[in-house]
Length: 178
Image (cartoon, rainbow, N blue to C red; front, top):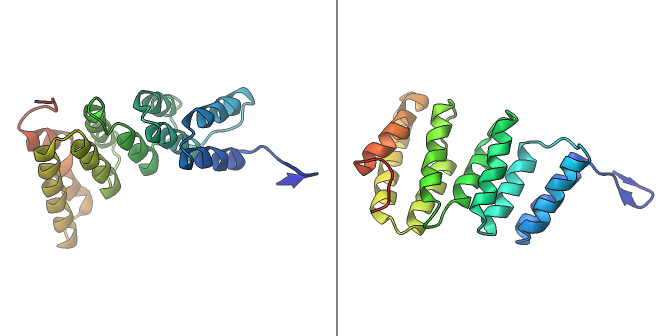
């Protein structure tokens, strides 16, 4: 809302500004806006968090992205698919790929349905860490799950193929780098 040439501060306007920072690669400014929301006690929603997580991820600041994601979980805000994918994507380098795996496992543990977007982010993280065999194995496991959905099986049941236990099974061990 514009009042006398000024934009009224709201969750929506801050979300738009944080998203713009993310698109422009300005993760520090995105964090500044997030801090301003905390100072002014403006409500933050899952869009706010997802945009800030994504901004940090694009700035290769996966530790900060995970800190924001953790604060979202601490206040019991629903972890949406977009926020989870942003956090998984933020961890897509040599050091963070195990965190991506842990996030997917956490989604399963909390009863969330792991989407194709989430699995795609995890596969991308494995690829960027040059773990081609693991990325390929997960892709095939996910593909089998989607094939079962298309064949008429219960999609919730078929996604059990890619839960944390099965993800570990794909690699023949717990997720550790060779």
